[in-house]
Amino acid sequence: MPQPSRLHGPQRSLLLLLHVLISVCLLLCVAPLQAAPADLPRPPELERDVQFWVRVYTQVTTRQGLLHDEYNLAVVYGTVYLDPEASSTARRELIDGQRDHWRAVLRRMAQGAPDDEEATRVRAMFGNEAAPERFVQAAEGVRFQLGQADRFREGIQRSGMWGPHIADVLASKGLPPEISALPHVESSFDPAAYSKVGAAGLWQFMRSTGRRFLRIDDAVDERMDPFRATEAAAQLLDFNYRLLGSWPLALTAYNHGAAGMRRARDAMQTDDIVRIVRGYKSTTFGFASRNFYVSFLAASEIDRNPQRYFGNLDRHLEARFAEVEVPAFVPVAALERVVKIDRSTLKQLNPALLPSVWRGQRVVPKGYRLRLPAQGTTWTPQLLAAKLAPTEKLAAQPKNGKVKLAAADTQPQPTPTVAPEPAVPAGPVPRAPVVTDGGDPIDYSVAADNSVRVAAAETLARHADWLGIAVARLAEINSLKPAAALPLGAKLKVDFARVQRAQYEQRRRDYHRQVQSAYFAKYRIAGTEVYIARPGDSLWSLTQRFTQIPVWLLQQYNPDVNLSALRQGLRIVVPRVEVLPAG
Picture 1 (tube, rainbow, N blue to C red):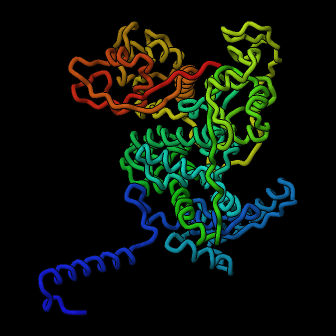
Picture 2 (tube, rainbow, N blue to C red):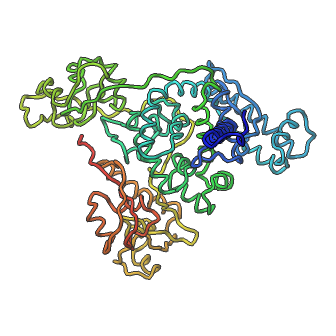
């Protein structure tokens, strides 16, 4: 190559530019292929945990499992091989027997017995942690983890059906694209997944949390719709990030709840995910919560490089369909007849419709967006209404054996029998427990000094009732008048002379769950907006401006804002809500 000093101006500039481009390319080539994005860090301190989950997701199938230490995931004692033909009792006995074996090994090591081959291997895995007291702890923490490699492989294939939609939704909200791997952890991308605790769908929403963003009633459960549930999951994750300001914490809150992660952050006085998962102690912050972020990092790595772990693997084609808004309450049999689509196809395209609809005990609700094959007639609500018989267009869901006609329809109607909705059907159980606080970030627990912070919709009388004491006594403790209003966020001293702390906390939480449940039976959150406080604004004026937003919901979206003392220029996040369709 010619030397730059021997070239003239334009040639020299061109060659220098070439040098720069080559240098940049070399830097890119030597950069780590799996470098984590800045907002989703992969701390070296957690790498052993990430690799454990990579192993679980790619090397160990559901016919196997690992016996390992609960806290140091680099310590894997052995693999348990499960006979698929054996009963669940036999499998459990096999697991328990091998667990007892390793407990015995650890106890002998704690007592200083000479090392045999097994003990030597275990000691090497513990490394610097190897000590008698650690072996005592480890003997009580021998844990079994079922493998997931076959499910994960199937999940990668299924993910192609909804991947483009997930990517679009995340991008529209400015969320990290890597979050698209989260359903691998939750459901193996199985939209029909149900858990034994009641979580459902691709994103494993509990009913209480799902109702904030989705329609869930006796005819429709949008948790089972991968498209609607994705939009809801993006809202919840965005909400978590707004509250916690860190994606490791926001993702962990998807499992542990926003309130739980706020408590963890405050207790540890840090948002460092390493310090929290290694040091935070709580009866509710168990193995699943501690490992949620690292299991997500493992799933994200595998999802980006499936060939590395599973060889050539084709994802399913993207799901495509057309939608039409149903113009009235319509029996599914009538829709089947009019659109000329067989029921099995309609069920596959409309997983949010519950069994009661397919059995004819409920009808497809007015306003429901019915999915149809992408190819075929272009349906509109008007065309659909014109094709339906007047007797097939109902004014409401059938209740108590009575059917109401739409105002324009006057012909007599059949009276379908309404049966109770069946119990949740059985299905695959996700690996991770799910949010149990219903998405509520407010901390209703009692502080160490026997005080609480007043939440919205609370009165002195309610607190006295939860405590089992007279209002006058509670007012006296707090130097208040019995009829005094409680300012939002004020500190209130409580008295446990009549009830235990846990009982009081439970009563308080139950009250707020009931209030929120009643609200989300009528409304759902459709998004957020930011309101900038103006001169003269107060909490009262906000409630007049946003009439459908109760104070408790405003507090949930602004838990660190003193809404009782607004000042000009303060940014307030306001949820946008919409009325749920009737019936």
